[in-house]
Image 1 (cartoon, helix red, strand yellow):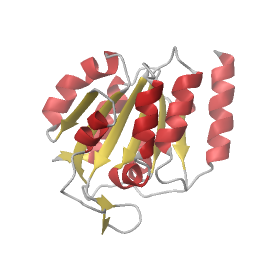
Image 2 (spheres, rainbow, N blue to C red):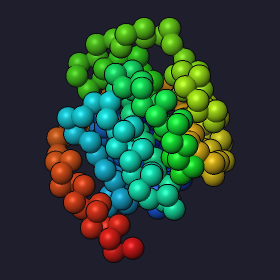
Image 3 (cartoon, helix red, strand yellow):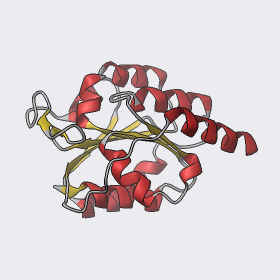
Image 4 (cartoon, rainbow, N blue to C red):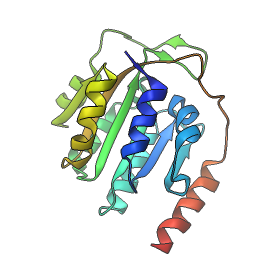
Length: 188
């Protein structure tokens, strides 16, 4: 298992100027480490929707890398988006699914089929051929630079666990974050 916080730190170190769309548990970690908050788009109150919003951004900004950070519960609620992503073939999209087997943000309830599914396999069978799974931080950190350079869409499932140092969850405004990101992209 990988510490979710360590996975987030590893992604942040490699993100460069990528746009990052994230929701639920990743919000707790990403906000604590992001070095480019003006390029971040948190999705508050939209469990399972980071992948849809991220796909839209990837299609609208084809010259910029778009990273999606979403929990397994959110992905399982919106599996159809994997097929849509595969059909649209955004070359600049990398989707990270944090597979902890629970709805961590809402109290730790188990996700349906927890421990019985293979998210990278589901993504691959949905048409995303560049699908990978990691349960070891060193392997993930070593592979990440190459994964971020691959022609997308790329799907990465991370088997994670949460440590006691998990940052507090805060709810912000997705609308305000969208305006901030839109203004930043308009400057460039």
